[in-house]
Image 1: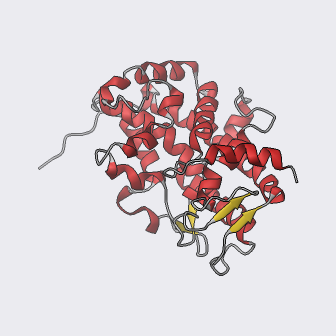
Image 2: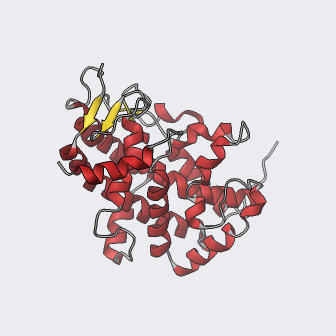
Amino acid sequence: MRLLPVLLAAMLLVLPGPAAAYGVLGHETIAAIALRNTDPRTAAQVRALLARAPLLETPTCAAATPAAASVWPDCIRNLAGRFSYTNPWHYQNVDICRPFDLKSACRDGNCVSAQIDRQVKLLQDRTVPRREKVAALAFLIHFVGDLHMPLHAGDRGDRGGNDVKAAYGIYAPEWLNLHAIWDTPLADRAVTTPPALTRAYSPAERTAFAAGTTEDWSREAWTVSRDTAYRLALGDPCGPKPTTRVRLDEASIQAAIEPQRLQVTRAGLRLARLLDEAFDPARAFTPEPRRR
């Protein structure tokens, strides 16, 4: 077994913390792929809007660059109760052991796919104040990453694997669980595996990867959750809940790398498409005033 890469990645998890889909490196990579593959005019507008990040009044949570904005929505969850209402926006617990049902997991728009659609509309709305547009942009960059993290999209009554104690190779602190493994060490291992994911993709690649809707992408990530994340950890993804700690050995980790890389690539190119749509002047609108 190649223990060195396992141990190096595990070092990233020395201290427990709140779940953050794809951790820092994963989110930053998705943002970098997106900015490399948007229209140059879109990229310029994204950077110009993020330069107004001080309007957010979150000095301990930076958002002035695409990389910083990609993790800002996780950072603000630690600001006492100020942003606690955003907690359900980071995931959607769609049962992997039943037919795909996004509607039930997304009541009142409190789920990640609905929030992606909402942030795009906020960016397109000419009447939304600049401060709210900065927040909408940071949320959009982050939530596209969240949606593509399989255990933010699929669940089997265990909070997306948070209740499944797990070991990453020989690394098995008491707090480590399946969700945390997919969040950070496994994502970091996938992102740093050659060839580099951050590059200019061809028009054909961008078209193929970016096609579909947030519901299509939700179903896809839910499938990866069931057929890869849970299957590698449990064997039968819908079998009995484990009563002891599960372990991802090197073979399981290797089997998860390409699915992780594919999800990060999809997220980056889909974010590029959504950014182009959000900043397209032809899609901007002014809402009709409400009638009493």
